[in-house]
Amino acid sequence: MELKNAQKVVDDWIQNHGVRYFNELTNMAQLTEEVGEVARIIARRYGEQSEKESDTHKDLGEELADVLFVVLCLANQTGVDLQAAFDKKLDLKTQRDHDRHQNNEKLK
Image (cartoon, rainbow, N blue to C red; front, top):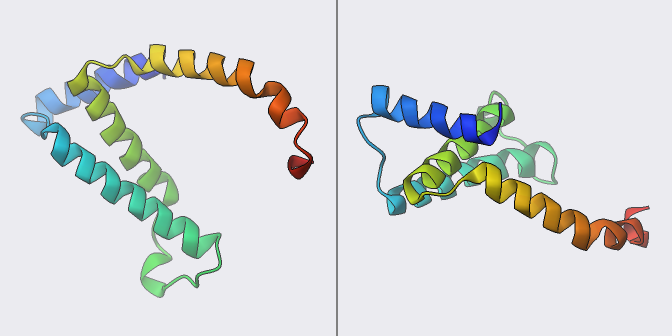
C-alpha cells in the first residue's frame, strides 16, 4: 500500500470509528508513548537489558504499526502528503548519502 492510500485508510477509519482526530498535541504525546514502547522492546529483546516476563508477549510489529498509525494521523491533520515527502526525502538521501555510506569503513 502506498503512503497516500494509507493516509486515506486512516482518515476513513477516523471518520467511521474514531469520531474525530485527537488534537495535534495529543497525537504528538501518543506518538512519543508508542515510540517508547518500541524502544522498550528493542532495548530488552535486542539490547543489553534483560527482558521482563511481562514484555515477552509484546509484538514489535504491532508497536511499529501503532507508531505508523499516529504518524499518518498527524500527517492527515496537518495537511502533509507523506508520499510526496517520503519520495523527496529518499531522493535527497540517495543523492547525499550514497557515497558517504559506501565509503564508510565502519559499515564494512
